[in-house]
Length: 255
Length: 186
Image 1: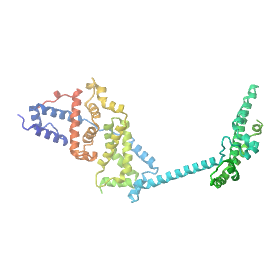
Image 2: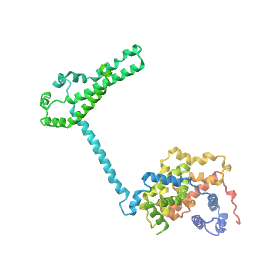
Image 3: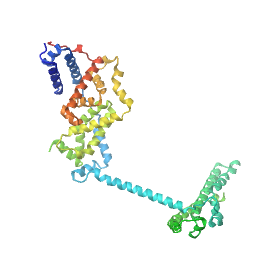
Image 4: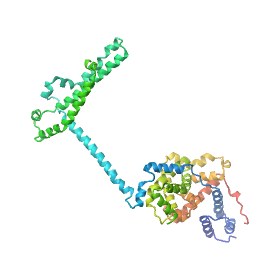
């Protein structure tokens, strides 16, 4: 005959579990012996208690402390995080101080990107915008080196094919390499001339109105402004390319 | 000032020895929870490291009026849950099924502790966390409720369901059976 009800048994069993007390008490055992349903609960509790009794805690790997502190130091580069020190001193926290820095960095990046885009656009505007069927400007027509320089691909093909004869005649490898290098330098020189000529091909302000049928009224001063602004860049580029061309050995010019 | 508060103050002042002491005082607790929750030692080490990095980052927000241990355990519990969710589904399933796969027919060769590990690994995430905090960290149901930010009644329910599922699993696998227990004096 059970001494307690099933409800009371469940309550006492739950309390024993929550207090980490043994469920193998006289009262619980007597009820479990008399009630089949409650006996199952009681035996389940006994099984788990027995299994948990030998359940050991895992030991952390050696060096975990050093690993954590090293990672911490590497994150801050100066021992412990500076925001922690700042917090103690009553300074604003890291989160609040770092955000403006991030904004500044983003702002700087955007500024640099915009500057680069502007320069690129200015260079593009400095180039001639020739329609397909419009005649070349007088400047381009008048100077044959510039016209030649506008076709660097063709020049390049000739320059590359020229070193072939030594190979056919069984010339030494060094000669072939030297010829190939000269041809490449020649091609580079032509390309440099082409770029320089491209900056020259910007028509003068007075001619701009003749090229297009109905140019916008405010365009001439604007184009002139652009030309003036890119003039130093053009000058620098010309110098650089001239230097490159002068640096090419005589054999390169010969090809 | 409590011992925890003094230790935290040392850390906030940039004292490396203080930081070392904090890690050494709590790393066993954090690592044990991580191992039981994740089931893999390597993963547990990574998550333990992550836990402490987050502890140091958030140390300024710790309330000195409250004990440090539950606060760190709460961070550990959150990191474990995140790590479990980031695992591939196959890995999660293999972890859950590891008991059945490994020891079908081999139950006799494994001891009870290993079987309990496997059974715990197969528990639902919240049951497992509750069981580990209760039996491994010996937290009360009220403390677990604080760590998990859940009502105490919910924690008790989870704990009893976890125990019932574990018993059922252990019995089904033949590790223990009711015949092992005698109702002495009945």
